Image (cartoon, rainbow, N blue to C red):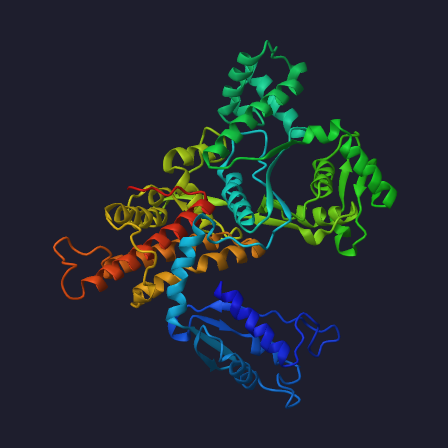
Length: 567
């Protein structure tokens, strides 16, 4: 892709000028590292790309050409620009204050990109950043004692989309789910079930959603279970397995399919938790206090985050099993481990990083994405909590109302760190106001045009240099952003940028469609003067919209959103 070529040429120019990249530089004792950044410009009048490398490289460094001790960013940028001028893809370079270099690409270069997209087809957007590497992404891993609420469900599209991005970047990826099927909450659920089954009021229980009644009926159907207080533990165990099946069913409806489901109880039964705690004890990471065993990391900044791993009654805590789980993740040979958790796990993150380090693995390969909560609205009106689940709106309720595509697109339209106001009315609307409809309509419109086209592969070559209008060139430029975006997200995990790209690409196509006729009117003659040129332009434009369709299809696939041929 052109951005990589520009970066390479800048790196080569800087090395040729005496600046060693990747080495510490600058006035600080430890130095700084120079990262060459090349970004798309928001306004074409400032070029196609821009770089601030001169601003960073000139600070505290000898001059680029060693002619002076130091240069200002503007002087540095001018020298660097002069060294790049002869690159064949460049139309021109502009140096602007305080030291940016704006990069204009030749039209002929953009025109050639159409053919490259058509050749790559379903592979368009891919890269090899993760080639030979393995990654695992854990997401949703919902509270096991009730229906999947939408707060936890938000992690589904985020994790699934990120996994798809990593796969397109060459990683071998596993999507995983942790079923927390042990602990006090399971026992409490069992007591609520037994109490209601023997006649106590639902509203007086610790778990009071109407789903408790469903659980009682399902337990009756699958066994000869006796509903009595002494069996509350078994009732809880049966209930969380029933709930898990429904959660996995709901995630499948959301388009999520897991490669592996881990049960927390298995870490106990297989003695993985016992073994990892024994190992931590030998290393000096555990201490006793008030009859309980605590994980005590050596990092002084985490001492106030020490936490119990074995309670005073001898039971393991959730965190103890989580340490065993994360040791397993790394021990199986994964290069990248990602947890996607709700924001309420904020305090859990530094403990997990310390635990990964304590069990002997590199915490720099471990990432946690925290997502915020969701509020539902219908227009300006806030939707109240649902009675069925007791305190929250379930994923199934939302899926039933607006469908998978809207759920995934609306979730992925927001940075994980931001709260969502999910407008159910907008998500259900069949108009351009609904962003997912707007994008899908672009895909369907292209499909319709191609279906009507009578053009076949009668020529081996198409004259893409005929694509000269701003509408055509802008569309090509949007198409070519996809590989850059995939590479960026594989590194920064900002999956929300993909929906923004989908909207921008659809918008560029709609503007192109409104201003550039693809197929000539039926009464247009191809035998009159200029007829051949018109046919060449038609073929070029058909190639352009086919490339657009490929980029849209690949983007929607990454998002887990359908690409309808008709709407």
